[in-house]
Length: 174
Image 1 (cartoon, rainbow, N blue to C red):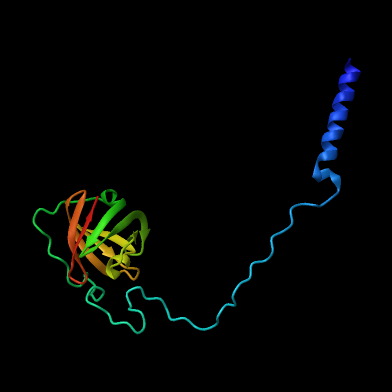
Image 2 (image 1 turned 135 degrees about the horizontal axis):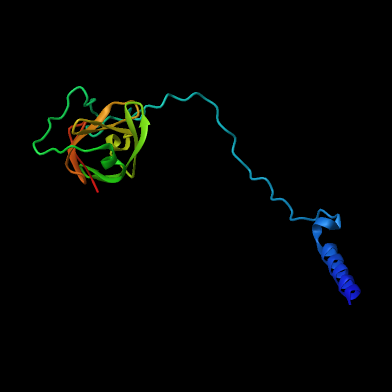
């Protein structure tokens, strides 16, 4: 009986190996896909990126024109409360003028503060936000050059109000 089981196992193994492509010696795998045609890459020099600079040939409007607020800080309102870095971490809704978008504050250190980014902002000032920092009770939102583009004060740990570098009211809330 042992001999019959051994023969049956050997026969089954031989059938399985003979049906496997890996051991058949043939390389008849699926044919490769044809190459995708591409367009040639142009050649030329690019201007340096400046997120706050208007596109060539456009007029800079009042919404994008502004100054660095660190030179002329917003006055602290009465009732402003102390906040900590951990109060700022996470996702926020950001609103200024008719624009409403999302802001994300991280605790990853960055030159002059901590990393931040926005999503869905059509306002050039709001879309330029790349960092944030605390200065006393004040939250400073900064662009990629480190210039302060908005200053806000907390009325609660869930609501911040202030102004942008263009003088527009801005709110950050959850």
